Image (cartoon, rainbow, N blue to C red; front, side, top):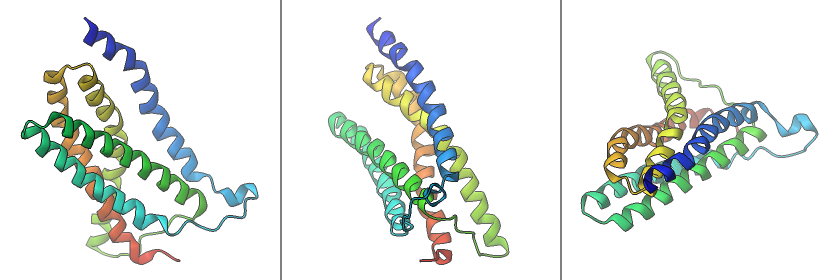
Length: 180
């Protein structure tokens, strides 16, 4: 009964966070600090840092799966907390960059343009979907419902890994078009 109360305790939190984060990010994406009279230089050093953060997140996720498959539960738990922390750090840097800089249009032409937009759009959609999946997966582990945790983790892991990897690919594809 205790395990269900842990999950129940977090259900409202999961729903609120899963709605608030994408909405706030979308709003802040359109907010430019210069429009409010703040004379800030674009944080143009951030994109390679947050792309690297995405890459590290992907590696940490893979290491976490390897850890749990080898029976190293504590290491798995630590690595998953690091992955969540890296994702939050990415989000903060991403929003900070976009609040100080104009969006960079993709300059590629032909088939590569379609590939870029497919990756970008799927990355964005899945980055929204992954929020509740990560939270539910984490709460099920907190509740020590490892059967249910494992079941949803099999869905969460590949989506989260895709989001992390495509974040790096999208950055690499648009990096030549950044104006510094």
